[in-house]
Image 1: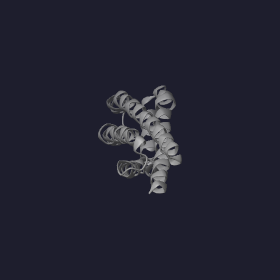
Image 2: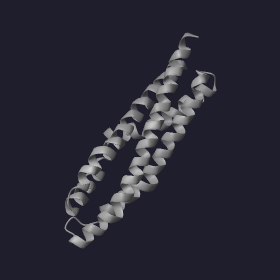
Image 3: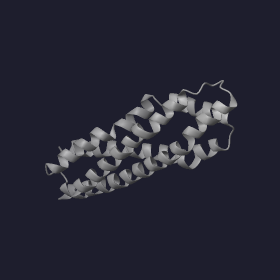
Length: 167
């Protein structure tokens, strides 16, 4: 069971790291770069990104940490590296919160922006962008912080799990 818990923790750590990196990159590079462009380019680029990101390269590391963390929590609660349990639970709660932010905040904004026609007039493009950009950026920063905090807790849990291997 300890090996299974190790695999769950390592897989969850890798997925969490990829998600923290992705959402942080959007926060400090992608969105600030796009904010400098005109409305049509902004809307079309975000539409293309939002459509392209739904693929296995994103979905596997995005979804994998949740069942991995649940499994690691159950195993830790059963006595496998119990010192790591609070950190695994913290990571699960933080990751779950970030997951909810994505589903309840960012995804609905993506879907609304997707309704803006690529050949829309300047007023419609501006309105679509205004309804999207500030809120999406704010919630992306929230999920970037949550994913990063989840990763930190998970790294510490993995450390404690490994430290308990000798005892």
